[in-house]
Length: 295
Image (tube, rainbow, N blue to C red; front, side, top):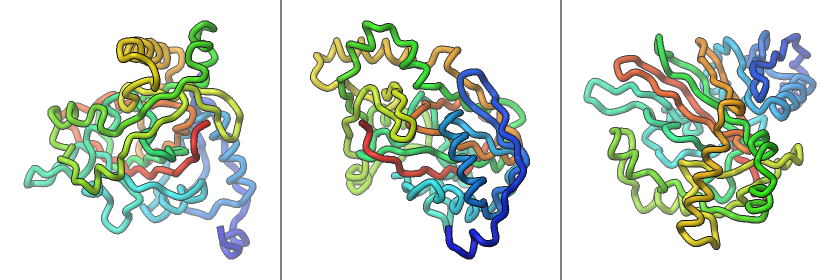
């Protein structure tokens, strides 16, 4: 943040309240339309590392303010589906089931259909994502988050030893055609888009670069295989890890409130969209912060 903004900033009074035993906390009494002091930002950063998912309540911020706050954590990544960028703000992906009068979707309506960590298919995956509620349905539309540090900690010792040094391939295309057949939101990718989503290989167990904690880093959406294992062994091992990693005791279910801004750590959690009834409208804006090479 510039010196001008820093000098205009002042320390705020806000509360951070845990939401679930495994992960998640809500931030109450903070207005993100105003510049954050260094002390407030440090407190938010620490809470994000401790709780993995932060829910900022009642944030009546503009897209520009959403982008500015997101950039405090690092450079932003642009999603490969450019048709769903917010006009004037290419950093924002519209997540929505709403369609225009001509039937064309305004956003990515099936985002989060499978458990995943955002952009794990990139050579440099995401640090975190920030999703801001614009229009919410009267029912449904929840988002589930699964703590992958807890999933690793509670993995049986024999399985820990088996996967500790393994690597896995992640691909954006892993289930893309399956999703295309289900919905109107997945266009046929161009050659240029395919070049943006070349598969990447990452450790099955990654170490958080800021806390040093280990976490499982595979998902049913993007992980295609364990490198170096026969296909049947790879498939069986991944199925076992997928089933273990999303058990109820690791999961926080977020029930959205108007103007919520939810910021989750893609190095620590996976997430899943619980689904919205077809006749109800849902729209949110998402930014994604670039992370670092997993190790």
